[in-house]
Image 1 (cartoon, rainbow, N blue to C red):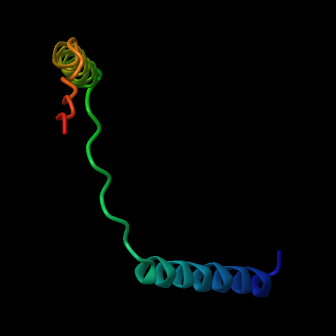
Image 2: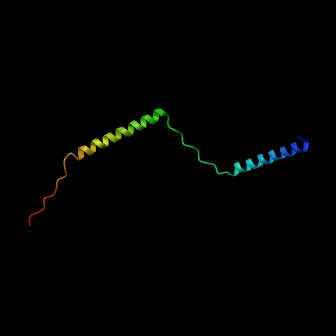
Image 3: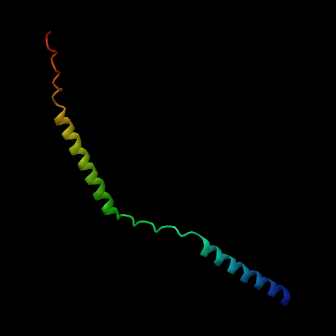
Length: 76
């Protein structure tokens, strides 16, 4: 490659570097990602949710084991 070609190539790389830096500086920053739970935390949370669901089912069964009292219409 000739010296002129190397200069052109170097100038192109320098220009490209400057353009990339400008784009990065102008790009909106995204909010940081929230930390992920560890597998143990995930399992513990799922177990808690399951326990709550079972308790809710038991309470619904208990509350609805007897049919609601139907009001008797008054005689006229």
